[in-house]
Amino acid sequence: MAEQEQPKSGNSRKDRRGFALLIVMILIILLAVLVFAFQRDVMREISISANVRDDLKAAYLAQMAMVRGQVILRLDDHADYDSLNEPWAQPVSWEGESWGSEDSVDGETPPQPEILISDEERKFNLLSLVRGNEVQQEKARKTLQRLISICRREDDRLMLDGDAKTVRRAGDDSVNTETLVRNLVKYLEERASEDSDDLEITANPNSKPDVRSMKKQTPFEMLTVGELLQVEGWTDALLYGPIRKADTGLEQKDPNQDEEPADWKDLTDQEKFEKRRESVENIDQRSTDPTPLPILGFITLYSTGFININTCPREVLLALDEKLTWDVVDQIITAREQDRQDIVTADENGGELPEAEPDPNIDPNAPPAEEEDKASFRPQDLASFQAFVTRVNNQAASDGEEPPTEIEGFTEEIYNAIRPWLVVRSTVFEVEASATVGKVTHTIRAIYRRTAEAAPAQPAGDTGQPTDGGTDTGTDAAAGGEDPLPAEPTMKLTLLFRDISKGG
Image 1: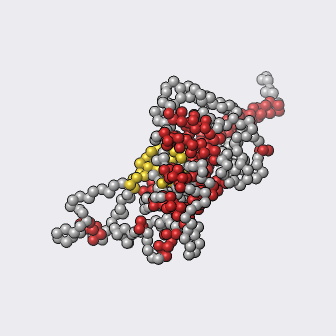
Image 2: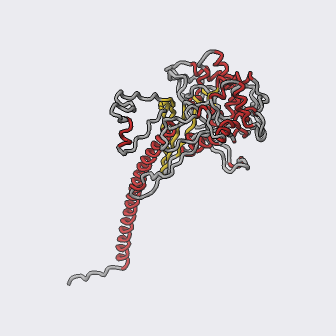
Image 3: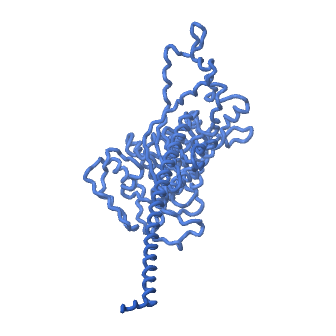
C-alpha cells in the first residue's frame, strides 16, 4: 500500500511566496535603476543638444551685433570729430528686429544682444612710454605716474565725496608710482627670450606669483593690457580695483552696500560685460568716488597716442599736466556737454557755420542724416590758446555780454603743455558684442582703426555727365524707375585685435 503524500505545511508555502516577492522586488529595483539610468542619459543628451543650440544662437547673435557695430562706425556722418553725443556712443536700438522668430518652430524670440562701442583715444596709450623722442617719453612717464596716483586717490587735486579710501594703508606693500612706471618701461623695452621660467600659480589667496624670473616671450612690446600682471608691482587690485579677499566673511560687509562686492574673476562673462558698460557710462559719476578706481579703463595699447578731448574722462585730462586743477577740468567737461553758442546763434539766424555748409551732392529725398552734435570741440577750438579759452567760456557769458577772455587757474603755459596730446577725433574704436541664450554667453571684442576710404575712380564712359545724345548715363537706374543703391560708406575699418570668449 503506497504511502500517502504528506500535506505541505503552511511555513513552506510562505517561504515560496516570500522568495517570489523577493524576486519581484529585485526585478523592480533593477528596472528602476535601468529607467533612472536611461532617464539620466536622455536628460544629458537633451541638455547637451540644448547647449549646442544655445551656443549656436548666441554665436550668431553676437556676430550680428558685431556687424551692427561696424555699420554704426562706418556710417558716421561727422568723422572729422567724435564725441559722446554721437550715435556710436549711444545705446543701440533693436526696434523692428524679429531675430528670425517668424521662421522658428517654437516661435520663441531670443534675447537681444548687447553692443558697447567706445573709442581708444579716450585712454592713455602705454606704448607712448617707449615711442617718440626722450622728451616725449619723459612726459608720457610723468603722465602715467599722475594717472596711477589719481586712480589710487592719492592726488591732492581730487575733490571727492568724503575721505579718500586709499589702497596704500599701513602695512601695505603697494609699489610707488615711480617704481611701477620704471618696471613697466623695462618690460616694454625687454626683448623676447625663450629661457623664461613658467609662472607658478597656487590656490592660496595670500601667495603672490614670483615674476622675477618671468621674461617676455613675444617680439612685441605688449599684446594685451592683461600682460601687465607680468610686470613686477602691477597687481590685480591696481588693474581691476580693490579685490575682496577670499577669507572675508559676510560679517565684514559694508552696511551701505546692497551686495557683497565680488572679485572680477568670480564674475560671469555677462556680468563682466555689464561691469564694463557701467564703467564707461558712469565714468563721470565715479570721478568723485573716494574708492580707488581700476586703472584698466584708462589705459590702452591700440590708440594713436593722442587724447580726444571730447571723450576722455576727467582722470585722463587731469593727468596730462600737474598744474591742471579740478575746476578747470570741470569747465572743459561742462563745455563739451552743452550746446555751442556759435551753432545756437547760427540756427537762430537761419544760417550755418562755414564748416557745416550743406553738401550740394546730397540727395534731398534721401533719409535724414544723423543729427549734428552741437556740443563737441572742433579743430578750430584747438588752433590757439585764445580759441580754446573762448570755446571753454562759451557757456559762461550772460545775455548781451561777451564771454570771459581767460579761465581762472589756466594759463597759456598749461595749454602749451597739454596741446600736443589733444585731438577732437578718434581713430581707433573698441566694439564689444555679447549675446546670452539660455546658459551660454558669447562675447566678441574687436579693435578697429577707422580711416577715410578714397573714393573709387569712375570709368571713363560713366562719368555721370550728359553724353552727346543728351542722356545722363549716371541716372539710368533712376530713369528706369528703379531705386538706386545707397552710396558706399566712405569710412574703412581695419581690424587690429579680436578676441572671442564663451562662458556660462
